[in-house]
Length: 477
Image (cartoon, rainbow, N blue to C red; front, side, top):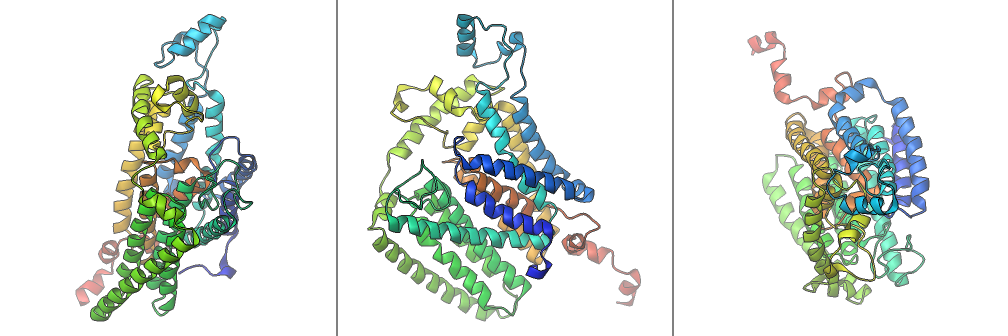
């Protein structure tokens, strides 16, 4: 069951406050955003609180998840450790830096793996935000974690509302929260329209998951799942006005996931009635989507649709020119990488004429390629280990859970999947708020309750319960 307001524990209250704090200050990825300094100080305080209250049993039950997070933090820190000149000069991709050292008489200077240490230091401090969310989430029960999904859904509506104010006010009005932003699009609580679109798509899936949770936990409250589904539908026009084509594709996938959450959580009885409801629901959803899309077109003077249906634009073409060069640079710096967070300067030093322009390239717009360039083989291996572990844990967790807990784990998988797809064309995990969403989704999937907690018994497989039943009862049967 969802926890009642009267039963909200201090860790849960801190988590809810922290989520609002992160989304208010952490919608941008640029290192020069002033609000990030406040956010990181607050995150360090929350991280200290989370570590202080964390039960050792909770830490042991989730040691794999914590170890993966710690390994990424450690890798980033290792990139800042100074190395002797004889070793550093042998690292691949340092030829230009070695030549500069020779010309300036700095051949004997100790340098870290990172070619731009202050960028790597910024990346290290940026990890405090999701780390605090992770350690705090481990102190929550499985039922309390469901409330974090509700909190994120409400934040999606908040971002949608800010998006509406931005569109009504015109380009660059006071409701844009960041100085450098997509001032002609609805960016909501973010600086980037793609990131807003990703989060709104996640919000759609979250509302579908909440509809499934309500159906599983409170089957008599039939109106609440319907309200949640129509809430998911109401976010569709806000995805459209972001003018993000990739975001719209994610929104469509999220709509399908939302309906799946709801339909798969229905009772087994009344199959004919359920089928009729499915047809009526699909018809209502299709009609509502068309009506909301038409209204969106009127409100935005079709600007959003014009960009969405266009065959391509400069941003897409630039990505196509960036990616081949990023792959080449990754090979040049293999296997150690250029240093976590060093993309801007490394790409500028190796940039070709095809991407030269009045503005700089801030990211590879493909997080997987950027990880390969900046983190090298260790980061790539760590990513592979993480994905493999998550896949195995996800499959195993589904067989060891049922009801609401299974729905929460499915919701985590959908959320991670949407973010992973977004990483193919952008950099959502560089944004503190989306990094926090992703780490929460990982806890939804793989977070384990200690064996001594009430949640643990609910998460045990049904087969195990049958095996441990009273032998005398079996004989009597």
